[in-house]
Image (cartoon, rainbow, N blue to C red):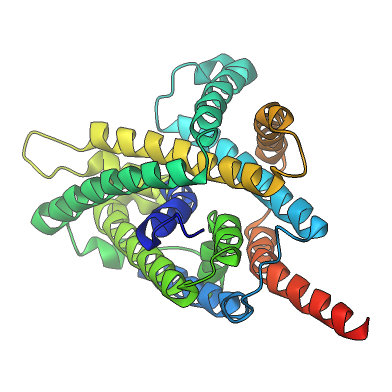
Length: 330
């Protein structure tokens, strides 16, 4: 991964974390921001073994290739399921046509992702930097709106039924960039610690800002809104006669595409030598669409998804230790 700069690494992986954050359900409070920050610290600590064990593992181990490919497909399916869920508050053409409309939108999104991912990780990482710039612009406008006209007393009004442990679990459950982070860091020969610190610092900072803005903007109606971050974006009004609806829709669409593209191109990267490229071209989008259909009907609980995130971070270093022990015994 020498061809990817540290900044491109961060924006590439972060796409899988930002989109679930935009689709977040349930109440948001100050405790939510604290819980998500604590969850990020937990992830950093779990990533320490991967930083220390500098041996590339995933590309050499068939079980790891299979495991992380499944992780990426599952997260791709979760992103598609989240996209369908948000159609309740965001107008997506064709969504009102039932399952066929959902499949059509998902197929179009997947087709765009296939085209983007066909250029390889280097090209997608460069493009993800542009997506990150779009996100920063939208976030800056939202911050200006919050500072100029936000009702900060809403922070006290904003309530959530979850305790701090549940919020930490919630943050871990929405960490959609974990598989991409583990795979790319596993193949990084230098600057592992720098990239890890940069990624988790940016993730914690962006999450905290988004959650606080959402609580300030939509705190008064938090208990009656299903998607608080989206509602906050729809209510933000930085200027007297201008809201940020259109800008948010652009950013939402960009991160929907890039979060799915990141999973797809990473899966193609680790499976490239095991499965012919032509088969992967059709197999990965079909697998993610299938996963999306299954997960939209049988959505796993936050606890299960949080455990899944933890296992994703620990699987690669565990494989390294097992293989080293096998070599010593041989």
